[in-house]
Length: 121
Image (cartoon, rainbow, N blue to C red; front, top):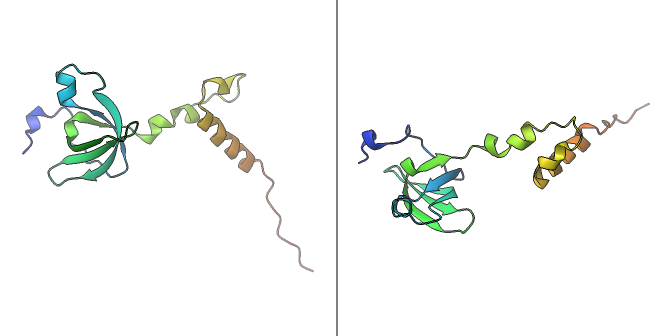
């Protein structure tokens, strides 16, 4: 049973498919490198622990304690697109290729003339 006095954050229930930042407590407290990495939630257990998969390496983390996890919200991943100053020269220089591709697609769709329905006599 988890002691709520030891918890570092409010209890969050993570869902399968969410991205989280995970800090391996054993690696962290023993001073090992690579103790913090991005994972995808694979399974939630009834006791409040989670099975994770490290995104970069595919490493499995079984029964991860939620106190060592932080949600990585989509809004943070998409911030460069949402806040891009598109009305200035060189605005795209700081954007990722994926962001530029998405904006190009949106621009092409938004500027496409709507098709008029066929006329009937």
